[in-house]
Length: 61
Image 1 (tube, one colour):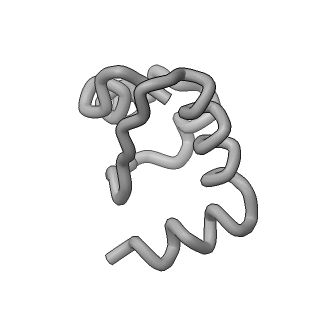
Image 2 (image 1 turned 60 degrees about the vertical axis):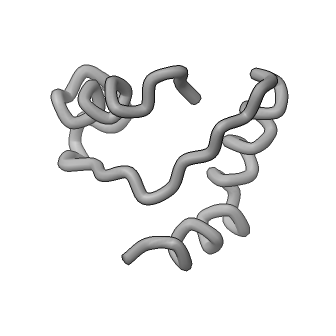
């Protein structure tokens, strides 16, 4: 969850995020824009669930 997707992706690829550091390089396969932070948290939780991961795998090239 971020206001600047390209900056966040750059941080992940630069190794600045501890939890994703060992899995570089990252690429964006899907983004959404939501107006409320609470909605974004719920959506992010879904996308990190098993069903959400299947949805994202179907989106990957």
